[in-house]
Length: 403
Image 1: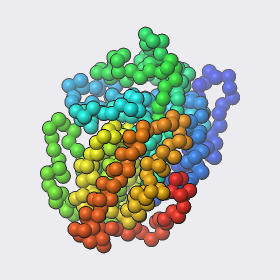
Image 2: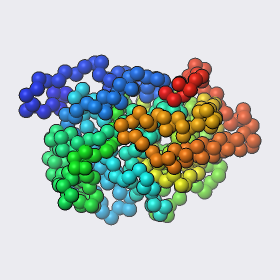
Image 3: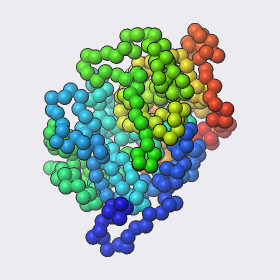
Image 4: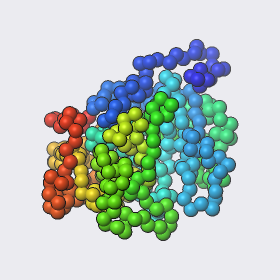
């Protein structure tokens, strides 16, 4: 399988799969508490490798392949192929999902846009990984920014003839390509290099489903994907009571993990969390994987409080999560400062504009006020949930907090 990924016409000797490769070690380090341990040197090495290793193949993702010939131009909600993502494989056989830059950092999502027609932003994927790590969730796959040469690292290494066919040179002599879908086969929807280099995010692949099966569940707080529809949670303030009585949210830590995810999504402004995935191996008490965060960080001037519905309606939060949020609200550990420092590591820095960083502090205060309202209404013992003993330990220094 690995040999098939090589360019067989290359005069170079065959590349050997190394078990010490960073992506292999990343896969082996996944446990029931997160995708990687705290301060993992493997993650740092994986980010470095994804940033520098040459690509040996490029292809559409399975989502895009499923859309070929199946795109319905009458649909209101366009499928994911509209956003154009590619699977890149590197010289060590690691794989990453590449999402190219579609808009500039300082462009806000227009206020009249629905969340399901918004662009996906490459810098949102990068920033979401850093925020997830700062919050000590460790549920977003390692993600890094990279300048990709679309000619040398995509066009010249792909074997997919359809992908080859959507490349063209623009009137400005920039190399461009677009998604192969009826409503997207237009040059105005293309992404273009300058003239060959294109910014993008690279998110490390998780183990294959054959090796590490995952299951997908619709979020209980799923949104309507129509122009006028509303879901029950939007009109029923007692909705959480029904959720807590129904499987699988009537036991284990599933509901608390959903509330963690809602807080994370509120901080980044992501309204597009319709499903979540979990590893089958870890059973009911496993963690929720925070995948597909590219619709975050769209509007720094607006806080979408409805994303916090699970917290507001259930009035429950993990003590671990609450302590972390309280720490990041202190002047010495201010969330915007820690994020700014963390994002300096990325090749595409600055990843976020200053207004987006400051919005994190504002939204964090909203979360803490919501928790305080719950405590005043129901009591701390009812609201703040202690996690399993030994699952976490508070960090005691700024060095640990920033890492």
